[in-house]
Length: 113
Image 1 (tube, rainbow, N blue to C red):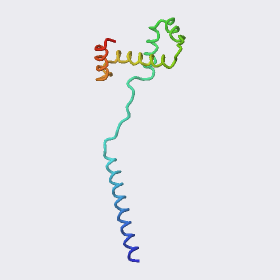
Image 2: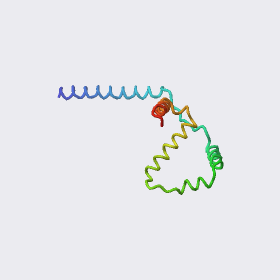
Image 3: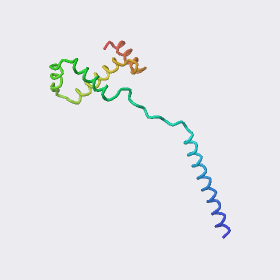
C-alpha cells in the first residue's frame, strides 16, 4: 500500500511539473510579439488595370500567333517559356535576383552564351 502511495505521489509531481511547464510555455507565448499578416502592396483593381495596360501595348496578331504556335514537345516548350518569363521578370526587377542572378550573369559572360 505504501509503495502505491509513493508511486501515486511521484506521478502527481510529474503531472504537476508537466502542467507547470505547459502553462509557462503558454504564458511566454502570450507576451511574445504578435506577427502581423502581410498584405499585398497593390489592390486588386490596380493589378487588373496594370495587366490590361500591358496587354493593350502588345500587338494582338503577334500574341495570337504566339498562342496558337504548336510545338512538337510541349513540355520542353513550357520549360523554355518559363525560363524566358523568369529572365524577363529579373530584367524588370533586378533587385530581386540577388547574388544568384549576378552569378548567372558572370557565368554567361565567361561562357559566352
